[in-house]
Length: 363
Image (cartoon, rainbow, N blue to C red; front, side, top):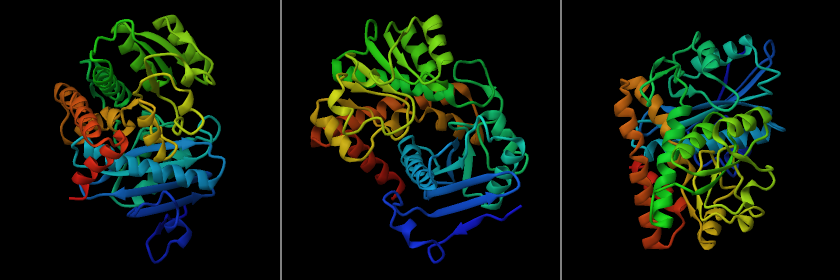
């Protein structure tokens, strides 16, 4: 087993320091294991408020540069997410380079667990795209630095295997209602038209909440099975993934991968509220201003999708589902503060959210 290569400021290649997404990360660790084929990166952005917690993503990245960019952006987002959720956690993330449907194995996951152990206790991994609770349990055979794997009572009062998706979906629903009330003057979702990009673990659960509230659903996804489930169980209307963002609806909920809001898509968006669970929805910071200029109310992704990390945090400090649910519902309070500051200063909601978070984790 190869030892992890821990990069410090006097060891790391200067090109990483110059990377557009570096943003003063505290630690980067790169790891490869020839025997299992594991290639992974761990990024710790900031640990001022506590140990860095963030998902372990497995994705078939086209290049190593793409993987590095993703882990840097995501780990920074976790710092801001935890700060705005009022958690004693820092921000980190890890990525495994590979197709989870082809390259994942128990041996590879075990190697990742040993990697997590060897990098110390500053980063705690949780489930993310391409990994599952079962995968994290395999890693957990070799380290305590995993979370979201303990069976407990979920926020709905039913048994939960540790999957944070239900909590993420509930928090997104709470935040979506707050954004709708701010933009349209009411939080009654009956008859509201909502386009959901991605109906996987989180997107489908969000759709279910919306259906129960009386919303009309339009969905897209790259997986036919997930679309079929949304049609059969929620009476959703399937929209081609190339058209979902430009659909004439009230709310757009991006719940797939990031960077869906960009130069090409924003001019096409007709929805006046964007409130979804996907991470890093903005392709770049300038798109925050574009949304404001277009009269679109954007609920910053790392604020609205914090339900999962809130749930995982309580797993480590003492879990009570009613307490967790109450904490998740404060997402609406945070969004309302952001919306109010945005209106008062005429600044984009993402800029306001960043500053509010920095007030907390840089103090």
